[in-house]
Amino acid sequence: MNDLAATASALVAPGKGILAADESVPTMSVRLERAWVAPTEENRRAYREMLVTAPGLSRGISGVILCDETLRQRVAGGRPFPAALAGLGLLTGIKVDAGTRPLAGAPGELVTEGLDGLPPRLREYSDLGAAFAKWRAVFTIGAGAPSGMALRANAEALGRYAAACQEAGLVPIVEPEVLMAGTHSLSQCETVTSLVLLQVVITLLDFGVDFEAIVFKPNMTLPGLDSGQRAPPGQVAEASLATLGSMPAALAGVAFLSGGQLPEQATENLAALQRIPHLWPLTFSFGRALVDPALAAWRGAPGRAVAGQDALLRRVAMNVAALTGRYTPELELEPAHGPA
Ligand code: 13P
Image: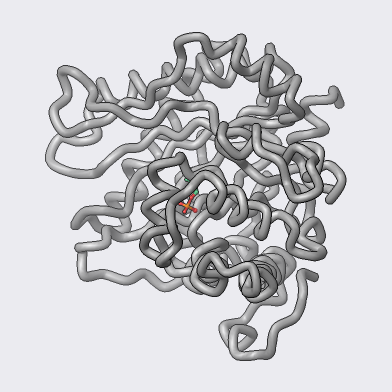
């Protein structure tokens, strides 16, 4: 196994998932303001430091995805975040896309930008200590959407990104997200997600990427937020696995995003996924479902850093329990315990 494939395998190692703490500066600022924390550069730094220094985090987390701002910041004591993460037994990831913009010619649809100048940026991130990268494409389900144009434009960008990452010595996390927003049914989400993943896999094959050195980060298959439906975890798991039919057997692994599900719902669905036979490691790369309770508990007060860390470690422990077949909803009612 080459070095990149070994890094990809480490990201999806048994009983471990990925912490997505890579909200862009504007998104993080909005989330801080909602938690009554001033959206300053220092508060964004302190919040990420609180998360990554949670004691024993590496027992359930393999790597942490950062944004450009955090990657260049330092933890208390002066070490840059990537060095601090390495010291804590965590791999450093970096979000390298530049966010979404309207896709010309496809009203209402989005394309992810950030390809200009990407190869030298990737080399710089690698020099700064990043081991893996992330690029997120988004698709909405609606009348005529996603269009063939949106599928092709976003898949093409993911293909160029993934190939450039591997050339620069970074493992690409390939994140095509079909959003929960909408009135669609579970089966419509399954159809669209299958189509999106197929288009992305075909494009990655065109770009000659090494699937052993790739982690896919798709959405779970869920009914739309405004559908009035709620699918039980067994159904979500069946439908989610069905969408992965186009994934090559060589793929290093799949790490699902949480997509705005409640933390407990995401964990329950992850647990159900483990119960169905599958070809690849299936784990989590959650953002909100891991960090929302931590942000709410921390509220920007240095004296509440331990409360924030406890809240994060509790979600990590629940998701590790899901990965290892020990999760039941009743576990949520038990007093806190650390990861695994
Ligand atoms: P959520 O788990 O909150 O969807 O975030 C994952 C992520 O990395 C979004 O790009």
